[in-house]
Image 1 (spheres, rainbow, N blue to C red):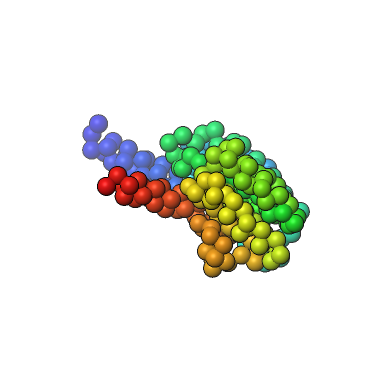
Image 2 (cartoon, one colour; image 1 turned 30 degrees about the vertical axis):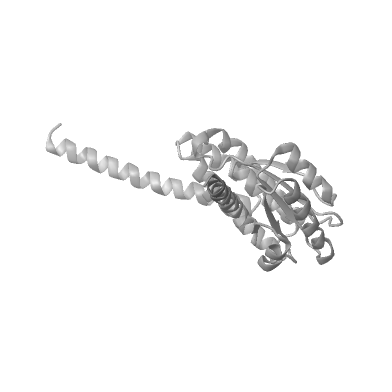
Length: 247
């Protein structure tokens, strides 16, 4: 290849890279907007195109679908979206997830972990819990969803049955929130190595700490990251404890 041909090839490669970058950003935006605007067909088309072009599926999921669902969560909290809209957004998200998830390499799936999730007894509000569940789904966790108005002992039973690393509880009322403290005590007595995360409108970081929880999810968007941090802290604590016992 002479110099002129080499320069032409370099220019063609540069243009192809530039075009690829633009297309990738466009697809991420289409996925995000499709979820926000509950446009299931748009999400399916963008996800299919991303697979055809060989873009990283995990990136499309996290920076496209999940990013859109975070906005949906914010719109719900501001009372700009209500339950029907959120459910349609969820349909769009799962439509894209069905297409993209089979193309995520196992080593890229992040922490392979299980979570038991539910809304505590006496509380029938579960849309916030469902948003968090979706984020765990997106991140590739195995989710054991107990639903809403869950008897307190059921959290304990399900954790023991599944040996899940994380238990996530939600409450939307102050009266039902108090049940969380009882569940934490029961779980920790049976298995102190479980990470427990709390969330919901009346719950704060201080409340979670006071109840003995290991973490607090301020929003659906940060729930998975908080869960991963909790597992890391508990493993470090276990390691330190084991080293201390061996000395």
